[in-house]
Image (cartoon, rainbow, N blue to C red; front, top):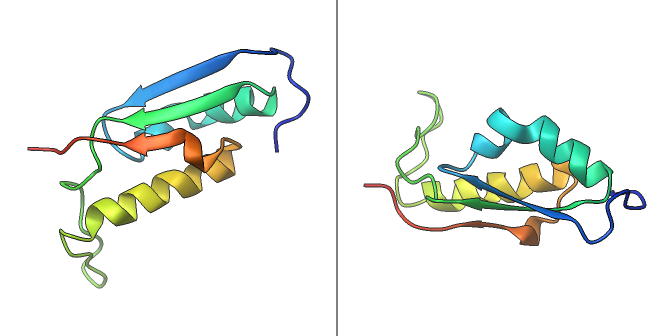
Length: 94
């Protein structure tokens, strides 16, 4: 949960190519700024529909993958302290 803001009125927009890039590339930075009370929003250019379908024993169908990746993105935002409503995944991979 964000504490009292050290940066009132400040916000950060993070733009990534794929869902999960936010945690792998900037998770620590997002967590730091949300802890300081900065509003962080995340946008991904794709919904992750061309990503890995899972390990051999658990495979996600291609049509389900974007929903799974968006759910993972929203869950990551909660863990990192951002509001899950502040993230969106748009576009499609080709």
